[in-house]
Amino acid sequence: MSDEARTARVREVLAQVLDVPADDIGPAFSASSSSAWTSLNHLMLISQLEGEFGVVFSNQEIRELTSFTAIVETLDRRLDSVA
Image (cartoon, rainbow, N blue to C red; front, side, top):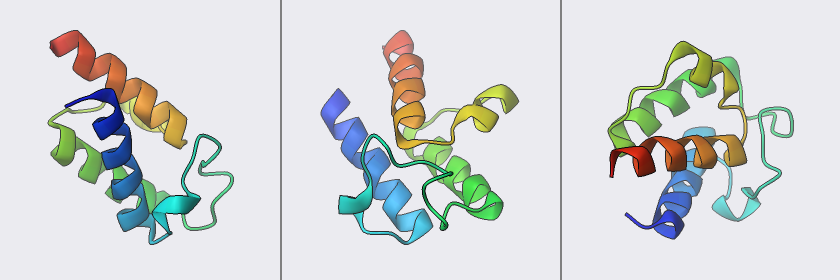
């Protein structure tokens, strides 16, 4: 999966789990900028991302995955190191 496709898929997963328009999700999108990003939705988001990308995040990563940018960067790092 290309980096662009991965970024687009992260955007789609965020939009689906948080029930927000995909067009609203950009580099500045984060838990602090979206009232839809609740603690329960965060857990659902992590679960969806793990299933979608075939990864298992560490507890530390789960705590840090609170923005679109952080999610994309972490997935890029994790998946590029496997490839």
